[in-house]
Length: 99
Image 1 (cartoon, rainbow, N blue to C red):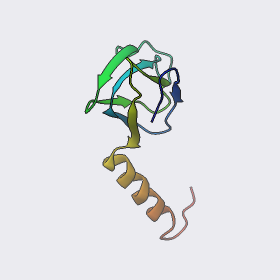
Image 2 (image 1 turned 180 degrees about the vertical axis):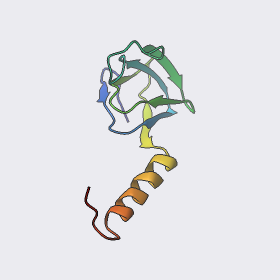
Image 3 (image 1 turned 135 degrees about the vertical axis):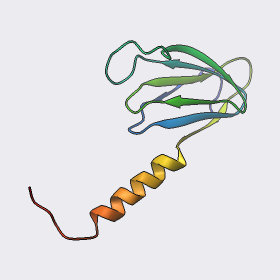
Image 4 (image 1 turned 60 degrees about the vertical axis):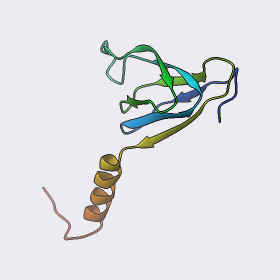
């Protein structure tokens, strides 16, 4: 729960979903990890039930909008989690390879 007057700074290492569970959020996104102008950069306003994808390395700041606190979830998609587990499993099995 993020109380009025507070903000959280988020910078994911993998693409992440920012989902507002309750309240209203004001989210500010930077240009992204490569410094190129991202059309999604700037201010975004989310209501409960809405989701915003944040790119790996992109900086996002979330804060409550209005008189109520905001509750949110920041998590990787199932696809990202599955790919990460498969990569870890693959790296611990099989023969070593050299180039």
